[in-house]
Length: 94
Length: 325
Image (cartoon, rainbow over all chains, first blue to last red; front, side):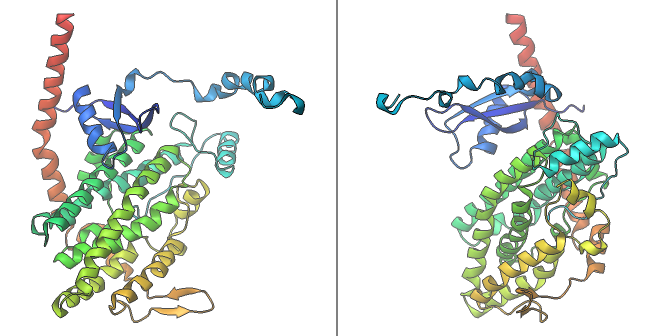
């Protein structure tokens, strides 16, 4: 029998109040083992307070070659940033 | 360097695409797994990251050899933690290689078939406790010099693995220096052992960076693609320069009579390692090549039933969950 364990992507919450962040991946037979392995591999030095694991095949992603059309529309809309607007000094902090 | 003599591939792809790719690299952009990349870039990276990963895993063997015989409980706990780190480093690197479209099992198979290599350094024996100190100090020290540079490599997943590894690796070098320091400042017999370990491991550590770039036909393309960031000779010099003051602090004799400070260059001069020995070790004729491969294969084969059993259990549970829904 020759079967490779599926690949899992690992997300760790570094501190209370922060969101989970992708830290890497690993192979595990199931979700329970993936969490245990993630504990051993990615939190040996107190790096986390919570772990999420997602099987890699379940992640859908944007296409790198369409990066231009995908993200360009937000580049031209500078009025979405607060720095676009001049607020008179007399008004004070806003 | 944990990757030595990596053969680079030329690419026969659309020149316009190659040029655009090179421009991204030159601009300091990171290449990510699903971006277009030349086949040669992909293949060279798989070889280099794969060899790097194998080195981490095989590198556990010479140190694991001393876990049960560490001189104190504290040293044992430290060594155990270090060896566990190496397994983790292997895993980060296999994961990085997998983003290039090769599976970990395939890489392990290639290693076991002798079609991929690991660093020459791990084919030397660890004869006594002083060697364990010297390995952490010199071998991990040399690895850090290489890996700090590789944090700036162009392939995103490789670069991120290096950042993670470097954070953990400095513990490895420090614990090694701490262990050898205890011996260098210990009894005369301990000091002799420390000296002996330094003398035996010095040149093998220098060989880790690979032969001189002048003789390396593969360096140029890898440097252009930023798969390699610094030349073998530059890295070796950096390692020598940083290590000699550490040797002097220990009060040990320099392991090479050719070591002298060169005022003009602002660097230490040193003797070349015996490259015929290096090529012989790479070919499989080092003191421990046969044992290392036998141990790796046995670990893989003996663990097969565990891997298969866990997978069978996971599938059974999944089927039961589906039936219950």
